[in-house]
Every structure is written in C-alpha cells, then in structure tokens.
Amino acid sequence: MSAPLSLTLDVTAVPPRPAGAGRYTVELASALAQRSDVELTLLARRADTGRWSDAALLAAAPDRVLGVAPSPRPLRLAWEQLALGRLLDREAPDVHHGPHYTMPERTRRPVVVTIHDCTFFDHPEWHERSKAVLFRRAIRVAAVRASVLVCVSRTTAERLVEVCEVRAPVVVAPHGVDHDRFSPEEPSPGSDALALGAIGVDTARPYIAFVGTLEPRKGVADLVAAFDRLASRHPELALVVAGQPGWGDTGIEEALAASSARGRIVLPGYVPDGTVAPLLRQASAVAYPSIEEGYGLPALEALACGAPLVTTRGTAMEEVAGDAAWLVAPRSPEELAGALDAVLSGAEDTAAHRALGLAEAARRTWSASAERHLAAYRLASGERALAPTDDGAPHGGAGAVR
Image (cartoon, rainbow, N blue to C red):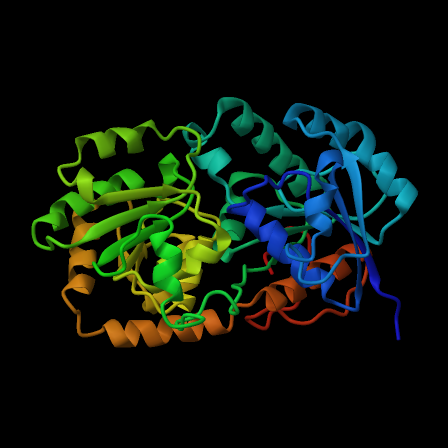
C-alpha cells in the first residue's frame, strides 16, 4: 500500500463566518481530513488555530494545524510571498494547495491553486479596486506557475482560458453538498419552525428565500424589485434576504428603501449554519438571481432541500441545476417575478423540477469533490495514472480543461 499523499492546505483566508470560497475551504478540509490516503496539514493564522482544531468544525481532526500566518490581510499576503515558500521547502509536503486564487511564487514544492471565478477580469467594479488588481495578478501568476489549477465549475474553467494565458493543467472539481444537513426532511417535527422563529421568520406564511452575501453581483436589488411586482398578487407573501453585507451593497439599500413592500421583507443578516437548511426547506420558493458566480453553492443546497429554485441562465447555476430550476435572464426583475409567480401559483411542473433537483444534488457530495481534488494533487505531484473526469476525458496536458 502506497504512503498517504502529504498535503498542506492554506486556510488563512477563511473568515470567522465563512461563505462562498470560505465555505468551500471548510468543507474541503473536512472531507480531506476523513481520507486515509491524505496526510493533511492546515496552515492557519496564528490567532485562529483553535477553531480549525475543533471537531465541530472538521468532521475528523486533521493531522496538524500550524498557526503560521499573521491576521491582517496585507501582512498575510506579504507572509505568503516572503515566508510561506521557505516553510513549504522545509516541511516538504508532496503538494501545497492554495484554495483562494493565490500561491507562494517562490517554492520548490508542487502547488495547486483554486480559481473560483473570473469576475476580477469581467467585472472589477464588483470588487474593491485594490482586490481586483491584486487578484487579477494572482490569477495570471497561478495560471502560468501553478502545477495544476482547480476550477469549481466548467463555466469558470472555460472562461479562465479566455481571459488569461493558462499553461497549467485545469481540473474541474465541482462543489458538493452536506446531505446530513441539507435534505427535504426536517430533523424532528417543529424543529424548522423553532430555528426560523429565532431569526424572525414565520413559517405560517409563505415566503421567498435568498441566501448569500449581499453584494452587487448577487442580484438582490433585482429580487426586491421582483418582489414588489408580486406583493399585491400574493398578499401573505414575505421575502427573506439572509446574508451578511458585502462590499458595494448600496444598490441593495436603495432598492430596499424604494420598495413598496418593505414591511414584508425580512433581513436576518448572517444566518447560523444550522438555520440555513430550515430556511431553504420551508421556503415556497428559493431565488438565487446572481448575475455571475463561480459555482453558486446556495442553489445546490436549495435543490438538496427539495425547494423550488429560480436562478439565472447562462451562469454556473444553470450548469449546476440544469432542468431542475426555473431559469431567467440576469438583471431582469420582470422575468424573475414571472418565474416566481408561476412557482407560487402551483406550476404543474413543480414536482418534476423537485425530483430532478433532488437527483442532481444526490450525486454532488463533498466526498466526490475531495476525490476530484485528490486527482489534481496526484497530477501535481507527478502521478499520471489518474481516474477519468466526470465526462470520461483523461487528465493531463498544460492548459487543458479536464
């Protein structure tokens, strides 16, 4: 039996309340920690080792958690370039994984880098200017210098090779979903209503749910406008917009201030992990009208809960949901309102959509995602005899999307 692959995973960018790429890193770490063929070491911020060692965060404790990085972002990014390479050369893992666009540019160890989306190129206005400049450079560097790139969707992988030179092999490793948490059945009778009552959501009345960071690309302002169009036709309907404020959310604030149905919009803020599934499961419809995403994990989690999902066509969410969702054009409150109205009015194909959604979600697990990552790690470490991709294509070849 071959020795486990030794892996260092950089978790220094994960905030205390993880969402998006942070949630991906947490779930990937948990899935990798359960594997006997991976010897996992987490590289964390010096003040942050406790939560990574907590069994409540990781399903199985990793071999090691090293508190090595400073906390402030500018210092952490400088540490990555000035100190991380030397640490890796000293620790000598088989592979190092940077799960958030960046990598140490000076190291002799193989490095895998995850690219979540290309919005820093396509929509720099959605980000702080300094972050857009930083991450455009980081992606270009990784595309040329990384041993392997991981993209979370084929949508991202195909766009990546259009916006920059890509010399590294690209492995598509879709996200998974935690089926222990996200399922159509509540854990016990009344537990969902209890959890939702704690954040001000009344399950006795119908509601549309949105879960995600409140930032321009999520289409929340369009959702508020769509809700205004629905409010008179569905007088008992509420809209629950759950998530923490992100950068550049003034458009959302303006849409809320102008809403004729503002009194029926619930803003619970960041929702605890244990409350997200009840919120999705009990919703009359889940709306995820994001303009562009690398993956769109809340859309998959909604499908796993059996919720009717309305999301945007031509995006990674269409790749994830396919025929299981009602698809509308991005930035179209009119189409969004029409699709939501069809769901709320009892569209005949709702049961078929739900069945397709549950089937699609069932095959997407974090264990399967970890397996795809392991294929990327093995490729980076020099192993070439790898399992085929989901579509049967072999791995290998610089710049090729796998």
